[in-house]
Image (tube, rainbow, N blue to C red):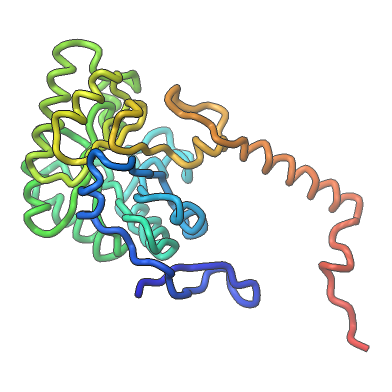
Length: 286
């Protein structure tokens, strides 16, 4: 039986306890094509993984952690060390979802062999089930190389943030006939190479629907279409942790506002000396 981590106030905050269910598998995700939509969110820490895991089919340790956690201007400076450290934390904090880890920029593009070395390190150090890589037809040989060697690969096409400099920005993709045809070709190529699922990001809705119909593996949308086989968002975006988000983000909460209000109350209690009170202090025993 796998293990998860839970709150134990008598000792530390994260201690392993038996998991109540078996973890989903990559083949189980593949079989969800055309079935109940897959739920996927990003996670970077043990505690967030604990909270998301019961509700998600997949947890993505995205290289978006460069911006969300480290305040970097893009994902390009994210390293394998970062991905392995955060990936291992998310695996430790989950017991149900399939954990997928992004391969950072520059760690897989040079050759299939280099991609295997990077992916093997990720898998060995984190215990994750799969890796994700950006790119279309040009990356198909690498997808095939990895899957033939036992490493499940999730593809990522359309708006690919690691290629933001070549794309010229974060605008929606697929508006021209040529780009539409290229992205369809990208989807077909990496699906045929063995990708178990594909993220389609920032593509116009008719193109997203065409991709879903074109490939046999699940297509997970982000800024795409509700007709995709699943959806993914950056968790901090959907929780309302940031004021500025992409157009395709729906904020399901105002967590930033609620955190600010709680801290404001805490600060007031400290300054008025009403915290700590009798319940939070230790007194001599009689």
